[in-house]
Length: 138
Image (tube, rainbow, N blue to C red; front, side, top):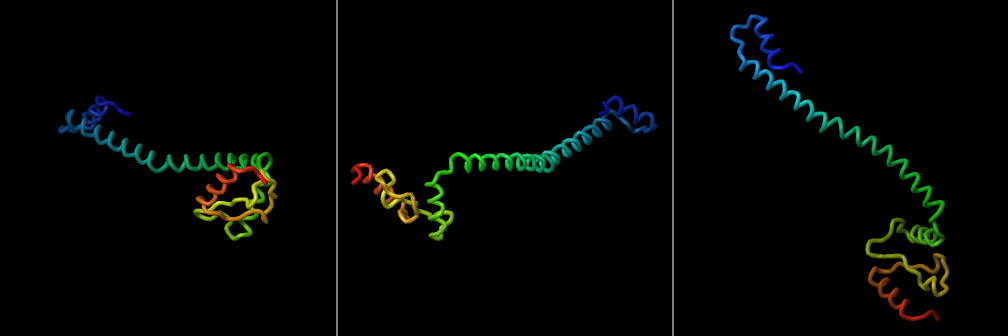
């Protein structure tokens, strides 16, 4: 970026009689204003697209590794049975306000099978769990 003295000298070399330090200062201010506009445009337009692309590429690999870990290590038969029950009952992603509950709890010897599952409202499920915990298995 050129300094004030260089700008003023360029006015003098051209033979601009009306050139003054004020004209040079005005030109410098306009130049700085344009630079600020270019920087703001870069920050608002170009930078977000670059960051979004970078996050998308890293999140895909993170998602794949998390899914692989989940399938390999923590995917239990209970989760598989609940997923199958939800799919077969027609609510693949769940029902708002409802949870999948076991008719006879697993702790009391209930089967981990879709025939032992039912949809209960959240309040009903809480009451059932409380009752199951307070009494021993029969």
